[in-house]
Image 1: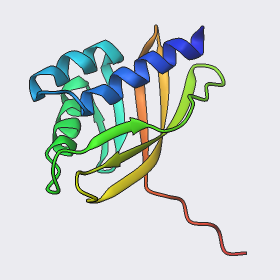
Image 2 (image 1 turned 90 degrees about the horizontal axis):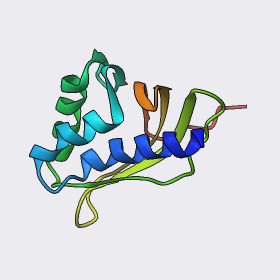
Image 3 (image 1 turned 180 degrees about the vertical axis):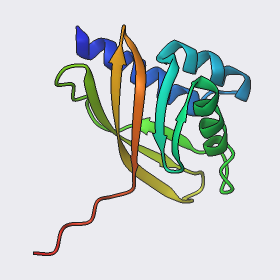
Image 4 (image 1 turned 30 degrees about the horizontal axis):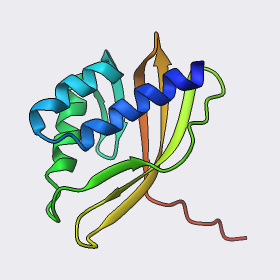
Length: 125
């Protein structure tokens, strides 16, 4: 049950990147995130749905064109923390980015997001 709740919040969060129109982004984020969400993204730490919305809108306006964000793994949830892998692909074979997000849930909503973008290189032995 807890994993289903997390999966629903995560998939709603991801759907904001793929909304048919920018005007739907805030509503989708509000369904998935707490109002005081803490977002650790590629550009540092920010707080609140408006900050996450700015990030999502920036991704939606990628110079290579509007891309598609999708969860490409199961949701692994050991307690109130969950992780999943994602991939963002731009149209016509443009840039592709993959990563892993770690999220914390409070009352069925995401209250923290930590974005790990890119692949982790193997360590030199």
